[in-house]
Length: 164
Image (cartoon, rainbow, N blue to C red; front, side):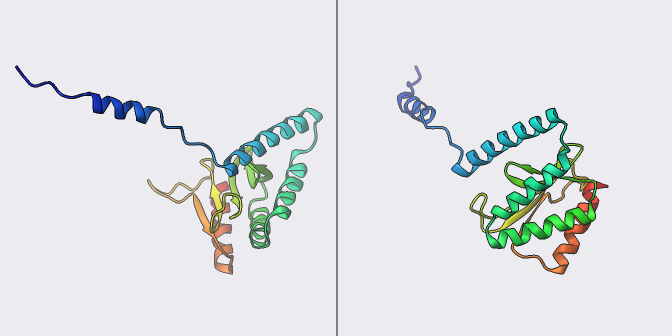
């Protein structure tokens, strides 16, 4: 006869593990989700009234940029100018409370301020609709602390490629 295993300990640890509280969204994540819900409502309202979304989107983006801290505002203002100059087909809009740029209603790129999620740097990100594919591996987000002429040129290239 084989000896019996003591399963009470493993059962207790399994029960304890299943009673752990699920991880919650941070306050910043909840705020971003609320902002997105408001954006969707505003877009639906604009579409119902037949308003020109591009002009409204630009004013929304500029308002979000104005709310940012000074360092993030400087970066966002330059990113906005670079995107407008190099990808005029993209429409400015807010996306989860961040300045974003869309093609046919789908976000291609966005700017996330450092203060948005209490990060040490701002981020320029690209969605899966951006045409940046380069082999089997390529970056889709870039950390930004400051913009020099070299970074601005690189961003212009990326935005052009993303929309090609």
